[in-house]
Image 1 (tube, rainbow, N blue to C red):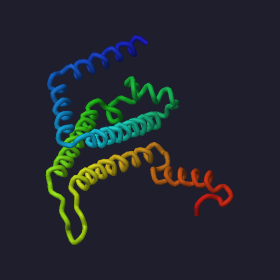
Image 2 (cartoon, rainbow, N blue to C red; image 1 turned 180 degrees about the vertical axis):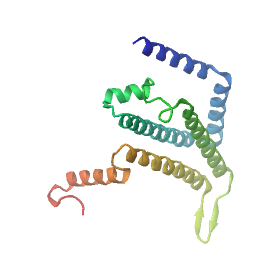
Image 3 (cartoon, one colour; image 1 turned 45 degrees about the vertical axis):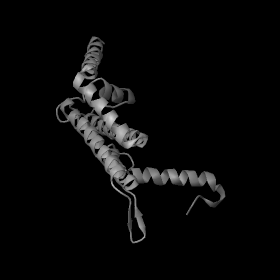
Image 4 (tube, helix red, strand yellow; image 1 turned 45 degrees about the horizontal axis):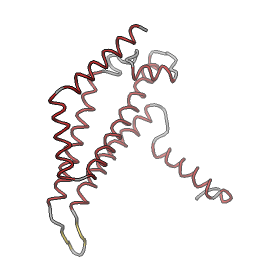
Amino acid sequence: MRKLINYVNDLIQRAWKMFSDIQFLALIVAIGAIGTNICGNRFWAVLFLSYAAVFADTLTKWIAVTKAYYHDHELKLTTWLLIVNIVFHGPAWSTGYLESRKLGRILEKLLTYTVVITLCHAAGKWLPVLDLFGLVFNPATVFPASASAGVFLIEFKSINENLKEMGQAGLSEILSNLVSAVSNKIFPNQGGLK
């Protein structure tokens, strides 16, 4: 219990140090000012959705790695142990499994996605609308949509791989089961959509 209290105390101190760092706060203010002034409020919706996708990817990866650790060491894994291992640096936080140094990759992804989304929104705002052979090319819509689609495809592909590593169904199978369940509710006498 004492070890857990010390760990939580250390975690709070590190978080406070990071969030009170003037460079970190300056970066957040700069991203906010540039995003809002150049791109408007749509920027924030896309940015927060991309951050949520990164969070989901990270969480599913941590669960997959924790399950692999317990499987490799022939230990029984319960839901409670899974939560403890992910949040409180349990035994799965060891070399070759969950490692603190790999957390830097998450920050790199968040920073990269922020820069790409900001640049695409800015380019879309500054470039003129083009009419090519009767097709209207509006950069204000196309560039942000392309960046968003790219980010979400990358993250959903990674989440799908993590689910398969966990021994779960992939996203396509989950989506197919969801569509079947909904169609069976809507069309109960026809056996769902065919």
